[in-house]
Image (cartoon, rainbow, N blue to C red):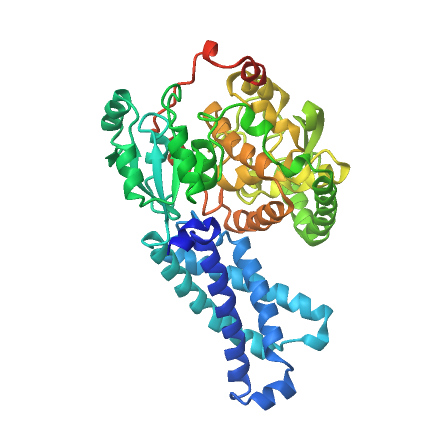
Amino acid sequence: MKLFRKTRWLSGPVPLLLLADFLLAVVALCLGAGLRFSFDLAAAETGLGPVLPRAAVFAGWVMLGLAAMGLYRHRQRPRPWEIAARVFVGVLLGALGDVLFFYLLPQLATGRGVLTLAILIAMPLLTFERWAILRFMNFNRVKRRVLVLGAGQVASRIGALRRQSDRRRFEVVGYVAMSDRDRRLARELRLAPLLALDEAVRAGNFDEIVVALDDRRGLFPTRILLEQRFAGVRVLNIVEFLERETEKIDFDVMQPDWLVFSNSGHAQPLFLAAKRCFDLLASFAMLAAMSPVLLLVVIAIKLEDGLRAPVFYRQRRVGLHDRPFELLKFRSMGVDAEAGGGPRWAVAGDERVTRVGRVLRRFRLDELPQVVNVIRGDMSIVGPRPERPEFVQDLAAKIPYYSYRHCVRPGLTGWAQLNFPYAASLSDARNKLKYDLYYIKNGNLVLDIFIFLQTIEVVLWGRAISMAGPTRDAEERAVPSVTPLPLEQVSPDDRSAA
């Protein structure tokens, strides 16, 4: 158990889900072949060919389908019917990929009868398995045991993570109050249990120490932390811990050098070249696959607004290195939506949105023409959503680190789009920035592909966000704010970076 807790990528539900899904999908196709050939192995080998390689390919495609439905997120919290619905669609998507694969390689075809039986077997098996694993992981013994060094405002950011889905990979064994002020704040913030540092170290029932001090001056136990680190205990700061567990960056507790010293893939030429190739391949594939949908959207807009009404809407947005470009969208509002009022946020139930526009926005179809922007190089498939210059100027003045969004190309979809609804206020823009900064810091091709795949869930379900993303209400739930250090206590380098 201790080995599993110390191995970070084994302490959550995703590795277990991946292994179980693969094995059950393999079993499903083997059972399908057995039923089709009356469990006669010789007949199956003659009529179908080797079963196990086909089962492995089928399992791989099914797992891609499940990933597209957001079912490999450690913070997912689906209800039983949501699990069943997403497994149903995920298995069908996987089966479609399996059919296309074997269409290219007909000598390895599975056969319609076997594939149909495998689909029917896989759906209930994967649904029950996923429900059981997620319930088990809420109460499992392989959660990392975390000792929090601090019991004040900064430490309360961990205490605010109270949902089972938020704590699926860790449990807090206690908070260490380093001063009388910490002890007073801990009582006010209901942080418990409170432990003495020496007592906690002697007990040794923790795998990680998270440094979450409001003020480190004269309180930082360097010797003890070094001893624990060399004894095999992981020591990390509050920013790194929250980034890992919430999949966003909490810049209320972040220092400016956090992004400066990060190893983002966006600073690597090889990644940028691979990302550009991915953008072009995905854009042309989307244009080919979605061309019937594009035609239907054009017809629907013309039928509602008349033959003379414009189909597309062009709008200036801010892109890479603050360079403006013209963004292309299907028009979802009336022709004179901003006449006399100037730019303003789109809100839920906006009266400017047309009937066709509501459907386009619900399924994100209004964004499809932006593949042209991707091909031109103005945008990428994955990245922060581009904002209007009028809003950028105001947001950059009011939200710290907002300008960092423009150090990468804006995207057609992005990590923030999976995890937060449309931004309709300054508070929304601030919350979405936390996810954008996470993507900028952790950008890699695997994450890009994962985001691209999971966008399918958002489109098919017509939701503003992925099932695994928090709601706007959850983001805005009262979390104790962290009082920043006065400017005179910040180093000159940090001042200039801020």
